[in-house]
Length: 554
Image (tube, rainbow, N blue to C red; front, top):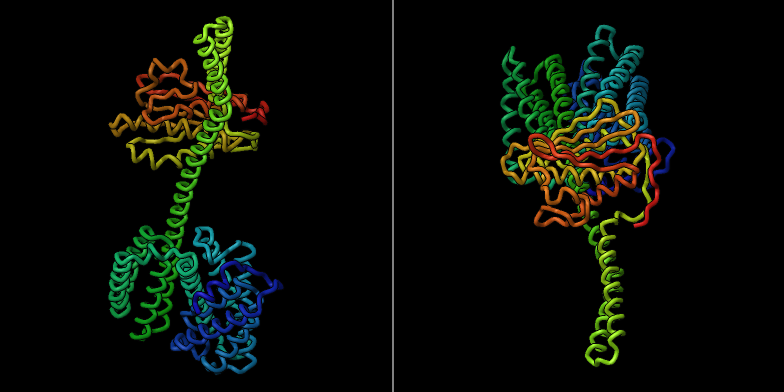
């Protein structure tokens, strides 16, 4: 049943008027009614002054979730709230007051859903920092607006005395805000676990044991803070485990932990039967706790996702580079070198036959001369391999070199740390926009950074440094990579950018060649110089305004 609900929500985000499959609509409406009914059967235990106002309203969060799915569910939300108010909450207000107040509340939920979905592009399926900011910005404001209208209607219809309007507004506001701010992120976590299959790591035995220990440890703290007078401040200690869960396990774990904390708090409050003012005070603290934990969890999860994407891109970049290099070498040798080698073999065979028979000395010499020419041609073909770069045309677009340098630095930061190398980035504060082929220049810069990290890390001292620098002049921009490694050996310094020149045992000697040729295609140049007292400095110089070469044959 749960999987069907989650499956029907997988790809739908619809506004008012958009078509909705009839079967899915009826299914979601039925599930919503059952959940709303069960929640209200519990929350009516603590109603304010014989009204339907409570200081804990998770049913409102369920309503907003349904309206986020589609505004076409508005009649379902209105009809359900009227049915529950009449037959479950048993409000003493007359039918007119109930109908009017339910219209106001439903309108408020619809407003929240529309603002979140259409103005902030909110999607409860995504555990992002931007989504949490939108939720925290919209929910308290909209709940206050809805609460003011709701209490106003109750006052006008005589269902709420004038002296109780402000108190009722306060309870309504706190109940709605806390219900939404706890339930909606918990729904995101359940969606992540049930549909995106992210719960495998979350539900490892060790992590489950820790989660149970945290929840069990929270229970007595909540009870003590409620039961003992003047000890409400103890509830603030719950920030410690909440922050730890958010940092250690991210958004899904902290959202579920906060939902469990809310249930523990409400259970303790119902069991100990404190005053509504005390209930509201704890719910206010719960709102602050939930906002803090979920913002932190969203930031941690977003960073983890970005790190995974960077690693995936690094892997893809390495794989594509390796495939391109291997393919180019194979094609060059197989297609080009086979021809002169075949001819050379034929000429040598003919010369040997002529010399063996001793019947045509001049013919043998001519065959050997042709063989010599073919060998020179094969050598020239091998030399041309160092000129190859990725096939196709340059895709020249405006690009921020500062952002590019930051991206490459971040891409290689983990490898640098593993090798004991400190990787630093120095860029101007303002963006530096230049028209280049972003992928090609990124690959060239990445080759330089990787070489520098490997050179410094090979020393094994664990104190090496690599600097990635971006600077600009009136007519040129520069991307520099400096290191304090062993420097460039004299025997290869004069032909460092030639193909197959390398000091690494497993290297192919193509990285600097590719980088040099990419820069040359951009009408720039790649230079290297020794640093004092040790190390090397590579500098990519690109014209700031000159047009780039836009097409080069592979």
